[in-house]
Image (cartoon, rainbow, N blue to C red; front, side, top):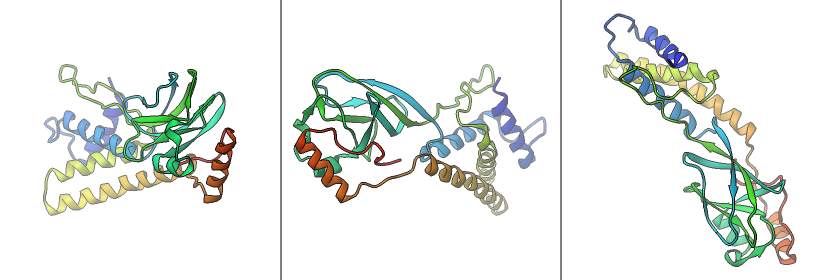
Length: 239
């Protein structure tokens, strides 16, 4: 029995004045709202991060990340941090990047449109593992009509339960569709957004965004011409 999830729904029912023996909203419907709330919180904020070791294969260019990956946050190989760069950036840094080979990795090329696939740079002649940490989507709560319980449990920390509750309340009020209920829904959404904004600020502190300057790119290009490992481990793209 998912006590945490049911507790959030019970608190939401109190606000909705839906505590009778014949409730207006089924637990399944409210659980669906709760699932949406968690997904909304996690879509743009790395509240769920997971580790993964990518075992590369000599000569293979592109690799798929685990299902549910939203964004790659950091990567390292042989204890050295790898820079996360876009395809546009690597074209500026090394026009011949597709054919460049080395004995070790120096970067991970990612696409801003989809980070389900990544490309370690440059190509290497032997297999080497890459340790990664990525922002992941939560597992859907689901609903089992036989046991009348959710299939999975909430993934994010319980410090966000108050915000999740307000999202459930807002979506339930919207079911009515009248002006008064819509006003209450907007109030609840405002409280949810306050939690969302707080989570976003905390995530920016945890995954500070750094920008690579033209001067740094020139240094990178110079290092590549010497055949050295390029870049500073403290400089990253994205989160």
